[in-house]
Structures are given as structure tokens and as C-alpha cells.
Image 1 (cartoon, rainbow, N blue to C red):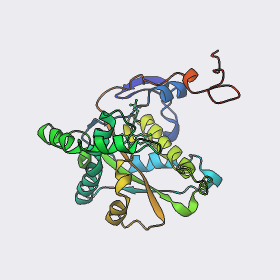
Image 2 (tube, rainbow, N blue to C red; image 1 turned 135 degrees about the vertical axis):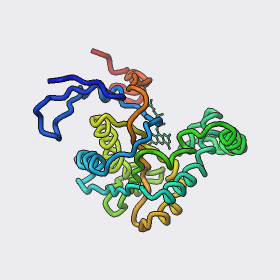
Image 3 (cartoon, rainbow, N blue to C red; image 1 turned 45 degrees about the vertical axis):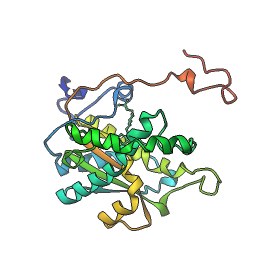
Image 4 (cartoon, protein in one colour; image 1 turned 180 degrees about the horizontal axis):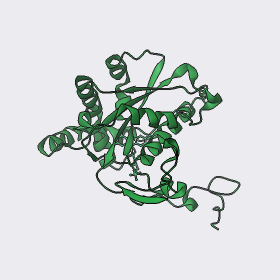
Length: 254
Ligand SMILES: Cc1cc2nc3c(=O)[nH]c(=O)nc-3n(C[C@H](O)[C@H](O)[C@H](O)COP(=O)(O)O)c2cc1C
């Protein structure tokens, strides 16, 4: 087995393995280091590679195995620019909300504090316009843009009839997105799941001829990463896992 270093991941490659097994990575290490990547080398990703990623991601689980994901690979430069603009339309709102210490658009949130934070949106837009373009401003030039849709007739949205905000339907789509990102990692690629454009769902649908029976789930941005994979900062298990009751005794470590 020869070992080679790729930007973004350590890959052990068995020399004679079949193509779909040719890159092996330690699963735990991969899960602990696959973070959001937003800086890419400029070259596009071949269709054959994207096809391979989707061919792996399609093994993700979904409620009732209905596989309600649909994907549009966005190549057309004009559509890319329009999609970027739809993303940007709410990106500065996100920055204003997050900078105010809020969880942007959380189902439970202080609406007055949100309104006060959103008043700062123009300042964030102006600051961005004055500086070099960031990830959001240059989204249209990303190596690969994959719009992930959810066929609403294929989602086992078991919390559909509850009075609270529903989210179980997304659980049939986002594992696919995560598998896509992990599959990308195995190819020496990286990226990020984004959802800001979901806020402009009607416009996104119109831009890509998406029927109303589909929801916009995510825009996945992929490319060859500029920097290496890094250790991620996450809360410890004791912060979120308990025994027998909510906020009961924490599950002890081994
Ligand atoms: C559901 C979801 C939505 C996200 N939406 C966006 C987004 O719209 N734009 C963006 O730049 N990153 C987005 N992210 C990436 C998160 O910011 C990222 O996963 C998080 O900050 C952890 O980053 P890390 O893995 O690099 O530590 C999203 C991630 C998830 C899981």
C-alpha cells in the first residue's frame, strides 16, 4: 500500500485496488476532521468525478428508503451568478444576526433582538463591498456547485402534523449531503453544505425550472481545498448526552 498526501486529507491507496476502492481513509479520523472548506484551487471538477461522488452518496439512508434527493449541477455562468446573488441577498442578514450573538433564524428566538440585529445588515454589505470578495461574493466561481432538492412527496416527514416547527423530513436528505461531502474527501476534494439560498426558494426554483413539489435543501460547494484538513472544535459528549432523562447524569466516558 502506498501512502500519499493530498491537500485536505491523508490517503492510503492500495496500488492494485479497483477504482471505487482505491482510496482508503481511517473512518474515525475522517469523521473528526471533515470540516467546512470554502477556499479552493480554481480548476473545475470533472463530470465523471461528480458522478462518482453522487454514485457513492446515493447509498445514504432515507426514511422508507425513498431517496427523495434530486441534484442539479450548476454550470451555466449566468445561472451561477444569479444563484450567487440569491445567496448574497440573505448572507449579510446572516452575518448581522450571527454577529449579534443570535442563532440566525432559529425556530426559537427573540424576534425583537433579530429585528435590531437586522438593522445592521447594510453595514455588513458595505463592509463586504469595500473588501476583497469572500466565499459568498465569489460563489459563482466555485469549482462545483450542486443544488440539492428534496422531492416533497418522497419525504417521511413524521413530525409533519405536530404544531412545532417540523424538521424530520430533512433527515431524509441531509445524510445524502453529508455522504457527498465525505465522498468528496475520499477524492482529495472538500467543500461545504450551504443553506442560505433556501431562504429564496421560489427564486431558486424559478431559476432552475424546479417544480413546486420540490424543496430547495442545500447548495453544496466543492473543490480542491487550498489548506489541509484540520481538527474541528466541537462540544464534548458530556454537554449533550445524558442517561435516562434530559440533562440527567452525563454518559461517562470510557
Ligand atoms: C445545515 C447546515 C447549513 C449550513 N449553511 C451554511 C451556509 O449557508 N453557508 C456557509 O458558508 N456555511 C454553511 N454551513 C457550514 C457551517 O457553517 C459549518 O458546518 C459549521 O460552521 C462547522 O464548521 P467546521 O466543520 O469547519 O468546524 C452549513 C452547515 C450545515 C450543517
